Image (cartoon, rainbow, N blue to C red; front, side):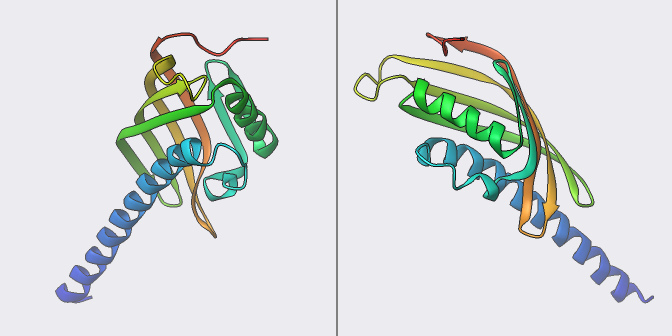
Length: 156
């Protein structure tokens, strides 16, 4: 293989890595945008998660699309509006799998007419994303709560 062929192969590898990182960061952003903008429906789940997704939050674990729907229903009935911000993505690629670490801050408003009354959280999450035929999807998501303020969700 010539030096030029080696350079082209190295560039292809670098472009693939950069493209994967950009797609995974966009996947993480898409998740938090859907949480805020598409609260009234569950049609977006398959654009973000695998069918066997496993979510872990301080208030419980949710598995698969049915578990995700139950989690979203709890969030919808507890809070009328939300505002999530994800940042500081660290993405470790390993072929068709990626480990993600990021920060997440969220404001949860119980009643839209009272936006000054809210429950706020901040923390970190670790996730595993996998490459599928439809692009990168989250298979595992674990949120580590660092801080909170205000009245949180009521537990049954």
